[in-house]
Length: 348
Image (cartoon, rainbow, N blue to C red; front, side, top):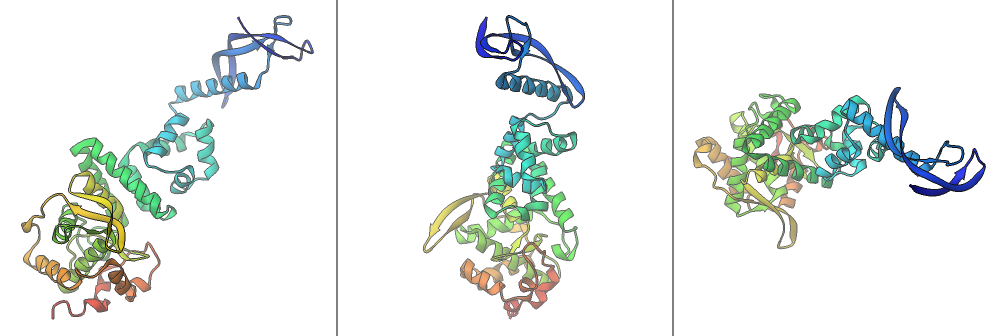
């Protein structure tokens, strides 16, 4: 039998106490859990003796039994979900709208309530995380959003074609919640992932790769210029005010899904004096995807703005009322295109 020298309060002395496997009862949230763990027993008085480490093991064993009976996530499950998306405890707490101490306690072994368990369990699904970040992403840093976007894309790639399609559908559902189909924020068109992908391919193939920020501006110019002339957008994308100018709403995630499907590749590169993420096409754009009017808009936008740098395009957009009159994250309705000065002579 194992022994451990410890103080017996009944005998009032230090002595060699036996370490025995014993079934002990612990109440957890009003329910009795009986766990078999090691405990200290005095060979003289035959009493169970408290020991902080062994008692801690008993408490954890009882909690584990309770989790099993009620099918609650374990601390390692919660850490695994968080790690899957590259989030710190603080970032996950911000994303869920919970206190940091709540996440810390759950990961340290405290029991979560069933409502919190239901939310945490949904983190296993990339489409839930996609919708969550798009609704609450303002609480995250750009780096955190990028990491989550990459993780969502990787999850989509790992789940295969059917599930990846499901994730695109989830993105469409989110898009509809964020700005309804046919609304002014979408240029009176439903968001079309296929058209979005073809637009990205068109510009990436035309330029042999281009910086993400520049791509965002060119997409905005195409959609808003086309709306200005034809009163309908090309892609159905919504555009939000961002620090460096208008950007497609949910841009990081949509690009990540294109990368997961093998449509584009995204790499950190240095081109001349600039460094950033460059999008390169891995497929060919389809010539028949766009109408003659839409192809005309693409050619005119690229001809007029395609040679400009991302910083120059950002500088121009910062002068416009559509950007100046909003705060970061606000959607920009397409009718604002009528007042964008540097689109004035697009069809001269």
